[in-house]
Length: 383
Image (tube, rainbow, N blue to C red; front, side):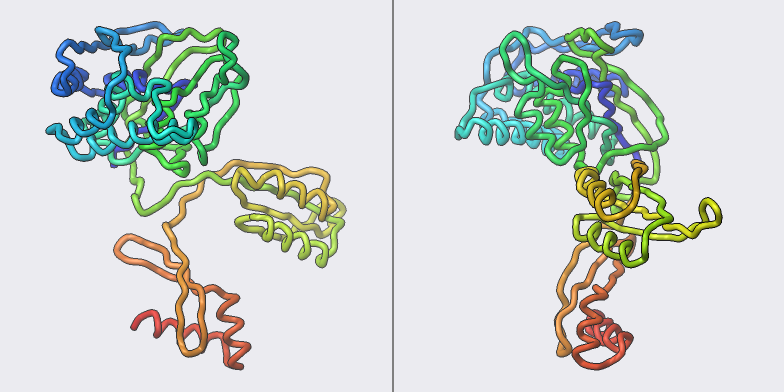
């Protein structure tokens, strides 16, 4: 499978995505011809080399500079009528529609004229993004880190992190940096939002081809760079990659009862899993190791429980990447009652698992063994 890894270092904008795509083999002149078909015959585009820090990167040059707004409804209609790959058209339209929807929501207007979302530049960026994905044969997109600035632009008292950008990146893990510049533009955020889900963050891959691009801004700290990486690997579409965290602590002065209570508290507060194992510690004392799996947003509340309900004075934290099967939970009814069933999609079919608590309750109500309840619902599931 051919994969595109979007790696902001720390920047991402529409023009940077296009010039980095050029470095991976995208024919930028094809984009120029497509823009001509939209009615902009004077449009010219080229990619030049530009120094960004110690790296020579690609930079996009467009002429003439179009600052006027365009009618998005008409442009989208023209885009859908282009003789382009349907996937490319779909990506381009989604990049534009995401931007419009966010601006309308933020400004509570049915039609927003603010920002760049109606500019020709945005249309060019959106079309180029779709064409890069299809021209390079990319089957799946991932991202690495997303960096955001803090504070306000001193010239206009506007947040360095644009509200539209933040809205488009809801659900994605964001990392603050001390660079006092806009790092991700709204168009860049819409590209991420269109190509990757929040779970599509990658931490390991086999790089095949690498390209760097830069924008017009010069940062006082670090370089203004985007890196795109073509990678190949067995990334199965029916397997979800996601990032989770592991909290670990070891105790040798807690009772089993207190441990059980803390475990209940951890589960009820959103822990994905809580594993407890024994070990021999100092002076051959028997102790317990608690391992809690959770998502990033649950770390703070789960740490509070560990410190409050156990004797620990320190907790280790590790970031992990895990792979899970797509799943859904449905209810299955029969003459015995109703149970929850987890269905997991696997290559060539599916597998399932019954909710234990439901099976247990039915077994107790009907005074029959657990295995009879399971067999009953297995037969029900297969009919």
